[in-house]
Length: 91
Image 1 (cartoon, rainbow, N blue to C red):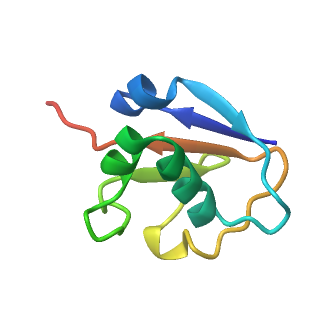
Image 2: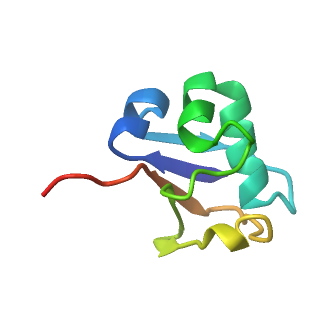
């Protein structure tokens, strides 16, 4: 079971916390694609028109930031916590 936590405006779309069962060997990229497939608003927030993860999205696995270049290769494990942060603005 993977826990997905969403923050700021992502929380409005996904809820603050949800869980998903994932098959062994599922990548972080596959999880994000599944979230986008099931939720069109989240898809528009996560991905550019060409299907590329927006560069300003912050993705964390177990409280450690994941570089976008690594998302395709990160394998999820039972008990992982994934956090999704939209761009931060303000001052």
